[in-house]
Length: 104
Image (cartoon, rainbow, N blue to C red; front, side, top):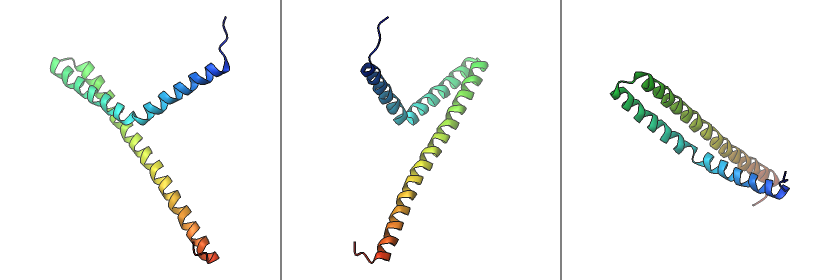
């Protein structure tokens, strides 16, 4: 059995991480496309008279919409947290400058 070198394992890990980062970057678009596909399938199955698959795809579409809302909420929380932290740091630096009577 051939052994895989540490450098090859590290290279494979880097490639996997790049893929995960790209998927995470475009995750909202991916979720929206799956929700739209499920909604199209719902219309198709209702028109065709297959209620079981129509209900199943309705549940999938609803779950996708809920997931998209949670994802949007989570990203807004992180964005506002970083912004507020930056504002607090600027405020504390301004207070420190006033106390030192530093012109800069």
